Length: 193
Image 1 (cartoon, rainbow, N blue to C red):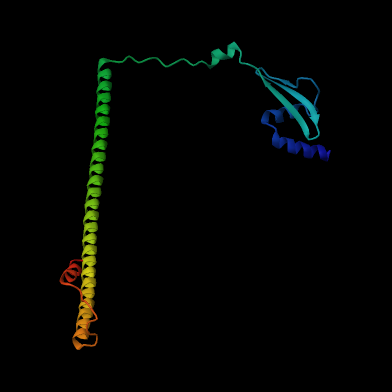
Image 2: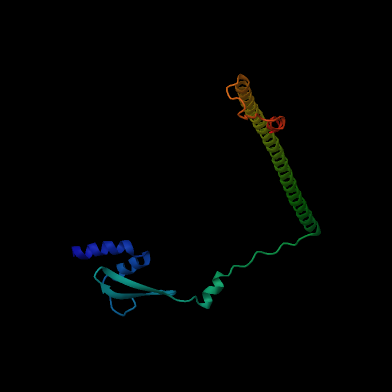
């Protein structure tokens, strides 16, 4: 009995309300016998299982009598006057104009934003170009200064070398060796580059 009660409690959790009512009327399952016959459904028991009872619910199609009961009459149509039609047309025209105005406003804002973005991009581009040009100018000036300093150092070394050779030649340490210093044209070449 306790086992049946436990199985019943478990099954009660699973069963629908209809199955619960049916199991209360007929606690013992009967094979292949219709337990309850309603006008729009049929409940058949399925072979008893170890877990408890099982049912099959078969719904029948609606009868033509019930179709008539479900149809509700539509409310009577109200006569529409010419003034009502004109009011509705005016309201529709106002809505259309309002929507057009909103679309035009949105397009104007979009164009304004695009123009602002384009102007900002052009300004940033010109600023970048100016900065790049200034950097390039500074770099070119630095290169020119470095080149001039390098050439001046080379000329100074060359003149020291020439003066040393002349002093050696003039002192008579190497008479007639044929030490020849740079010519005027060679010195001018170094000044150019």
